Image (cartoon, rainbow over all chains, first blue to last red; front, side):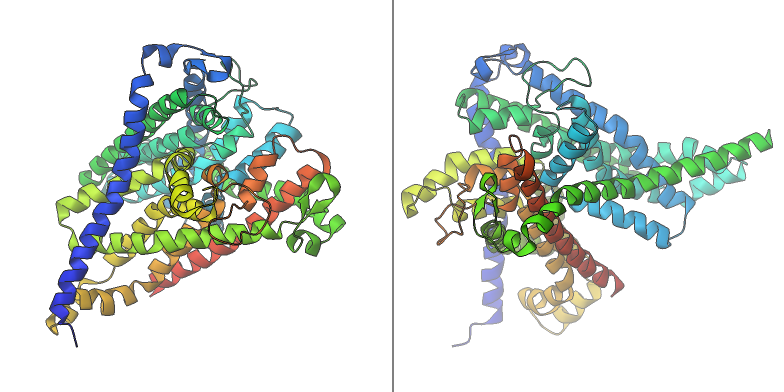
Length: 278
Length: 287
C-alpha cells in the first residue's frame, strides 16, 4: 500500500516538531537541574568566603577572583592581537596567498582541542619558560585559545561597516589609520565586543587547558606568578574527588549562571549590531 | 608633518602584519613543542609499538595506545550516532518549519548549549546518565554508551548551527520550483534541499566529530578510563584525550614523553578531520 505523500508530510512535520522541542528541552532540563540543585547552597557567604578543608566548607571566593583574573587578562592580551589581525585582513590586503596562510593558521588554532592547548602550555610556558603553574601561564595559554574567536567576530564586524563611512572619511583627507581608529573601529565596536564576551565565556568555562597551566592552588593569586584555581577547575575537583556535592552544585550554579549571562549579553549586543546596518 | 604621518601609517601597517602573523607563530609553536616532545619516543620505542601496541604501562616501558585510538573513534562514532540525527532534524525544523519568531528564540537558545562547560556535562552525566545505564542495562554505568550520549548532546550546537546555515543558503528558487511541480514540503526537503545542502551537512558532522574526539573533561568523568578495547557498549574505555588528562599532572621522564606521543597522534587525527571539513565547506561555497 502506498501512503499518500501529504500524510507522510504531516507525520514528518509532527516528528520534527517533537524532535526540536526535545532538543530545547534538554537545554532547559540541564539549566533547571543546575539551578534548583545549586540554589540552596548559594548565598553571600558562599560567594565571599574562603574555602576551608579543601572546599568541603566555606565559599569559593578565591576561585571567583581567579576566574576573573584569567578572563580579564586573557582578553587584554588577545583583543589587540585579534582586532589588529582582523583590521589587517580586511583593510590592508586583498585575498592573497599570505592572507590564506593567516586564515589557515586561525582556522587551525580554532580546531585544536583544549587538552592539546593544555599540553602545549604545560611544556612551553610552565616547563620550558620556567613559569611554573601560574596565572601567567594560564593567561598566555588562554590568550592563544580565544584568539580565533576574536579574529573571526572582529573581521565580520569590520566587513559589515558600510563602505560609505570609509569613503567619507578618506574624502575628508583622513589617513588610513585615522579612518580605522576614528571611523571603522567605533562602527564595528558592538561586533568586536560580542567576540570579546564570547571569549570571556570560553575562558570562564575552560578546564582542561587551565588545570595544567594555572594549576589548582586554592589560595588567592596575588601575582602573575602565583598558581590559582578557576571556578571550573574548582568544580571539577570537588565533583571528581567527591569532596562535597553541595559545594559542587553551588559552584556549578555560579559557573553556569555567569557563562549564560555573559553569552546572552553577547547575543544581545550582536543583535543590536546587526540591526544597526541592515 | 606629512612625512611624520606617512611614517606613522607605515609603522601601523607593519605592526598589524606582525599581529596577523602571531596566529601562525602560535600554531607553529604548538606543533613544534608537542612534536618535539612526542616524536623522540616514536623513534626510541618504534612507531608500530606505540600506535599498534595494546599495553600501556609507561613506567615499565610499554607505550601502546592502540586501545585508546580505537576508543576515541568509538566514542566519536557513538556521539555521531546520537547527535547527527537529532541535530539534522532540529536544523531542518529550524530552517524549514519554524516561524520567524520561533527561529529568533530557538537558534540562540541552542547555541547557548555550546556555552555550558564540559565539566558540567560530565558531572550531569555521572549523576544522571551513568546510574540510568547501570540500573537498566547493567555494567558499572561508566561506559561507551554513557559517554556517547553526553558527547552526542555536546556536539548538537555544532551540527545544528552549521547544518542550519547550509540549509538556509539553498536558493529559494529551488524550493519554489519543487513546490510548483506539486511536491509536498517534505518531498521538497528530502529530494531537493537536503541533496543541495549535502556538503555543508557533511562538514557539520565532521566538525562535530572533531569536537567529540577532542573532548576531555566530560569524557574522563564518564568513560571509566579502563585500559582495554571495550567489548560492548556497556564497557568502560579510555580515550586519547583522557589518557593525557589523567596522567599529565604526575608523569615524568619517558612516561611524560608517552603522553606527548599520545598528543601527537591526537593532533594528526584532528588536523585530518579539520582539513576534510574545510575542504567540504569550500567546495560548497565554490558551487
